[in-house]
Length: 99
Image 1: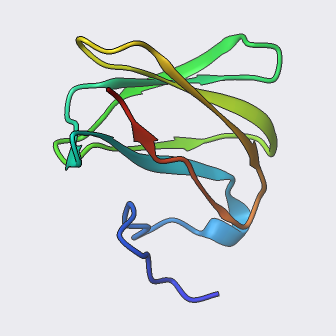
Image 2: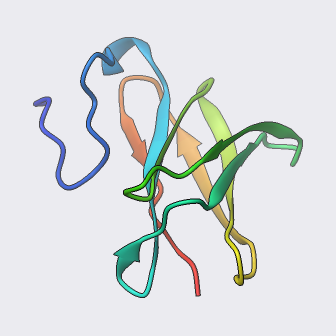
């Protein structure tokens, strides 16, 4: 595995071999969406964490390996849920488009 990303969030300073990374980009109308909120819910649906998207629509969580739900909340849009089975040593990418 090389350290290069393919249009995703940069991983500078992250030792992916030791971390469980869930990250992605939120977009609307084919453009990155800043100011949305992304929540991380555990396998039972319990709230674990929340981060705002960056100016380029990016978000990142460090979590335990396992089943997670990424819930995206954006002004003027219905919430969007995406399931992910995250594993250590991999870049677990969840890109979200809101309408």
